[in-house]
Length: 267
View 1: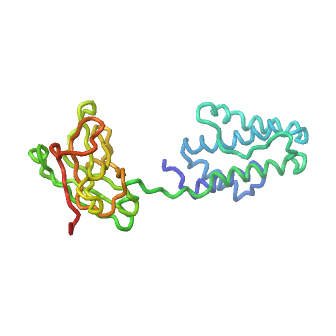
View 2: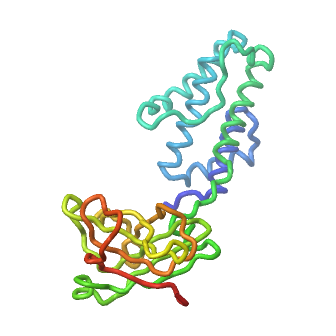
View 3: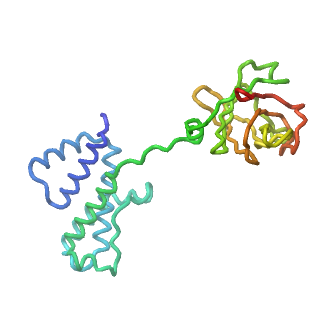
């Protein structure tokens, strides 16, 4: 059975609210039964728990203005779904706090209506837009440049593919997309990124140390993804390099552990 679509699920909640409030006509009742019969077990359980807990909360928190028989019916209707609360957590419902006088001022029927409408509105709210991942933020930002990193030293003996740097000067952030860089034992050595900056003379800016392991994030092509933020502001990068260093990294490298290097076009 295919699950109900988002619009159909929203309509089902509205019809269930109308049913609770006694506002269904024959046409709506037929539509409700059709949607309810097509909903998956998971969808029915989620909606049943939500409305059940709502009704139970109203019945328990209302004052004496609610007729006893009505309160009992609400409690019976809400009780079954509320039993699952300990397993899946409370559903978001409109809270009716004792001492606020909501039942006394509005009448219990109006309070039920307000609470049901609030619950339906909460569940039928627009879904939040997906947020870009950190690498998508850097990759799509204006001014981001891509620099190829060629294998050097011992890495060049085993790897022919180039790696890449994505760098954005405005954000002062970047990503390494690495190919063929082996996992390291951080108790013995770590990788360190260096950024050579024309505005800072001969000493490279420390881009941070990092490790490669089975847990390192990868992109769809299987390339290792390593985010970095330089220790100092970089004005005019002329080269990016990765070295193997002792654990914790070094302040100044002698490049003996160089494994990757690349220059922006025009440098």
